[in-house]
Image (cartoon, rainbow, N blue to C red; front, side, top):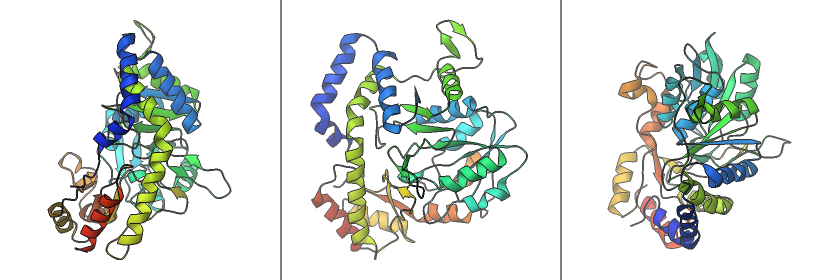
Length: 368
């Protein structure tokens, strides 16, 4: 078997360091917040080159807390993509705003900036692009549009920690640091994953950071003194922070290995199916290696017979989900609908061995 992901192998690679980190926290008796969480926030801020990182309970929490901290609320509209994990839309609705869906660019599965103008209304308050599969959305065009129309930009960077946006003549910038704020997930399957839920918000803006930190802890700056109504309990625990501190120094090496694996896949599979398109402005970190094939379901069944894991991210765009059919009619977002019928993610993680890679390639080639 070649699983799509192997978290056990990752743990075994880091076992001594992880076990020591866990023992350190258990011995301290400090399990929520505290020194480990503060240190992780500082280390993430240094890695991303932002002044502020606010940890929280999940990537979903990071999204809606950031939106609220940016002032998005009831009556507002937020432009986003239909081709994403549903948390992107949930976050918009959690703050009382309405998602407005814009179709994707079929080359990279990210928000298509050419379609933004048609979605703009007097109620539009923000744009929420998703850096899907680990590739940065076209942030230059998105930011120019936002600036022109006075909109906030929140990046959903849940799948893209370590990805870069490479604008012409500018040094590469980290995904999640280009807009007003970026929301990151630390779910176990992510390129940087905890052993449970976790997330964080990155921003250059002190007011957003301060508001997010207040909201994440019951609207309080000081214990039992609450300055914001309707706050949340959204905290990263110390055990997860300690584990993430072990993993963070390895992230660049792991992402480089993901890119190397993607290049091998590309070389051997490009004549058999549609391989990922890495945009000239992007450094892709391949959270998922996602291909397209018109017989996706049959290909997936063939791979399963060969002992190869695969997954579909995502089988239904948001507007075809029962809970969100009021957002757009079927057929109105054709690029997203076509992608949902054709995408398939192949095994991708830094610990894939050469024999496993060869097995995946042979299995795909024997079908496609």
